[in-house]
Amino acid sequence: MHTFEFIRPADQTAAIAAAAQSKTAQQGADVRFLGGGTTLIDLMKLNVETPARVLDINRLPLDKIEAASDGGLKIGAMVRNSDLAYHATVQKDYSVLSQAILQGASAQIRNMATVGGNLLQRTRCVYFRDTAMACNKREPSSGCPAITGHNRTLAILGASEHCIATNPSDMGVALAALEATIHIQGTKGSRAIAFGDFHLLPGNTPHRETVLEPGDLITHVTLPAPIAGSKQIYVKLRDRASYEFALASAAVVLTIASGKVTRARVAMGGVGTKPWRLPEAEAALTGKPANDATFRQAAEAALRNAKPQSENKFKIELAKRCLTYTLRTATAS
Ligand code: SF4
Image (tube, rainbow, N blue to C red; front, top):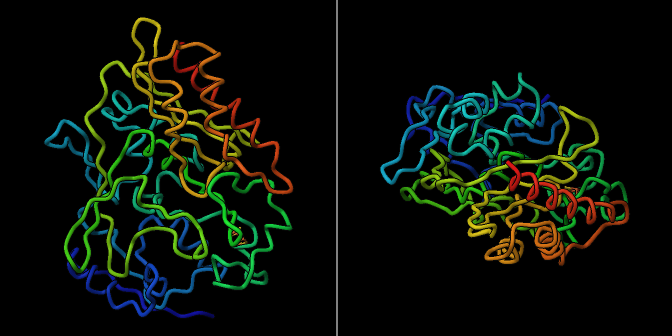
């Protein structure tokens, strides 16, 4: 049995100091913060995560949702997914976020899972979760059996020859479309990172998933001021209707005037190695008539660089239809 030290830091400073004692250079894999535990405890049971220290941060005061001074919203890292999804301001001004969260996991998991934990959610690649198998993400340079094995659910965007795992988050897709910012406190002070810069592409270091360094604590996420009159929709396509990860999903935030798209923010899930923002689709939409022809052109642009694996070529057309349908639904709402 793997043993570990369990610590409940008294405050944020103590939590960061304890986490900074990590002996690994990458993200501090030997020291983990414990929030809701809905990913970490699962992976510890499977021996995929074997931290020497677990720092329980549930008592830190990071569980508030507050108005930000710029008119946006400040969301504490320890806010539970359910509390965020049902928050009145989120439902009114950032409804795509509420929709995305409520299409993820189960009610019980959403009641436990935190915003910070969701940002660090790990892949559902079956080889990653099986310590009898090689996996570059779990054990660098050991190989990637998914490339020639079971890859039906894995990535068609952003993959490398070392890893083709999808990021499983629904919440992250909405945060990408809402242009969220992630706030981090570390041993060298605080910093803010645009959502799109937070997750790393696998490249030849798939074990490095984010820009976090040992000691870094996600404190909160901010959303910009809501866009007046925007239409927001999250659509998720999956093998079964609940408690399942996306094969393809889309989050769109659109504004339309005189029948034309005046502003578009688009991201997809289930297809990329991280929550996948689509500037190509946004450019193809902006200034164009809000109709099916435009939406399909945007979907074609979005998937232009997609590279399928042996079992998931179907995802390319599925993703195009998912995005087209989401845009059409948003326009009609
Ligand atoms: Fe591991 Fe990534 Fe390959 Fe899956 S796709 S086996 S997570 S290296």
